[in-house]
Image (cartoon, rainbow, N blue to C red; front, side, top):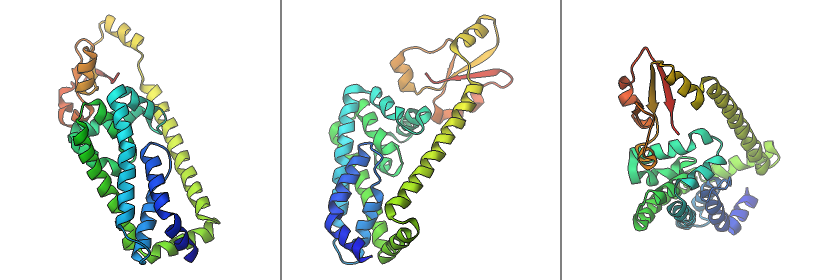
Length: 268
């Protein structure tokens, strides 16, 4: 435990700033353990909670500003590039845009607490035309709350946190080995979850050619456009006779979809 404390006392601030900057920039680098460890270290009198909170907030904000600028310049293309490397690309963009539709700019405050959204929200804010000053204030507030929450969690844990690290190192050989194994299991779970989702989607999918053929044959199909209103306005068109309902409106407006007919949902 003393070795862990000495290591964090020497390299803790650098690890906090670097790991937060890389993770908030979109790289799969875990940063919350270092924030928690810094808080636990402060509880033992080896530093203060103010420094890791400040470093975490500044690093996260810098990473988000870069994505905000990219979104301002390239729009939704940035989101689609980010989601292409996501573990859940099929729902990645839609989930982010739904959050902005539901919460508006306030989504930036809660974004750091939601995995994935913390990286996707800044380019979406930039693409939406949000003023830079407003973005910095809301994003900075969210980053401050996020960093304070995890450093505060570490402060509450105190010495037991380092005792837990000792136990992990005894049974896992090293903390690095433990976290590597946990990450591998998580990635495997998400990979098989994605395969299952795609298999289900293939069963229920209707190609554009088949849809046109069925419409030309006079079949009574109900078309539901699940794109966000902003996407429909940007595209300037939808399929003839389609009912436009945003995904976040489905619970409230599902009664508008008639029963007893085949329903075709589309979102692109």
